[in-house]
Length: 299
Ligand code: RIB
Image (cartoon, rainbow, N blue to C red):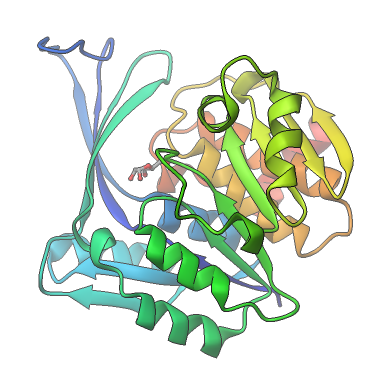
């Protein structure tokens, strides 16, 4: 089985569904409250596991009730948690999320344990696992991402979901095979005057193999191994986009380890993201492989 090491964040998501997302200084009433396991790293680990990969999570949680709950969710999804380090110095990562009736969201994060992931522990974990792929996002320190990607074994695929984008000066682009960004992140990285395919091409040149720009309801564009790819989105009824990008990343990487066709792996990831957007919450919205294949067959 293909092993993916996901090096990333683990959050408790406190979600309030509201008629619309509040402006600065505004209070909105009549919300529905929910709490879910989340964090881009943990979400992508669960997505990859449900898609059929063998997955190890590398990261940190606090030694509190939320940390125990999040570890339990990862284990329930058959994610290896031996390399998730409980820390006493701070709380488990927490995200406060508002979701409006269109399924759009705003997110505020208290990083907590995600900010104190130890590069040395990550290096040891990656060396012991010798994974076929390493998948990172930007919710842990850049030094940790750089450490994870520096432990190259010849077969490993290195994928970075540059989310959230912020400044990327400390990211070792030449150690990365594939970048995954959404349109806003792509614009922030290359400038707003570029079209999505231009952005994918420019960003691909900074990496070993390529870049994927996801476009939400408009599908995606990519430049991988010198080939340009454009694929439309699956048409679904969106209720909550939180975690849809994570579903895409986890399922895409799992599929790419199984197939020689980036196009097929992208379609598989797109179907996973589309299904996640039809469900509430981040981690609870991740689909399994049979549900993903069913959508691919009906489209
Ligand atoms: O991508 C969605 C995730 O972003 C949420 O689960 C939240 O925890 C934030 O990390």
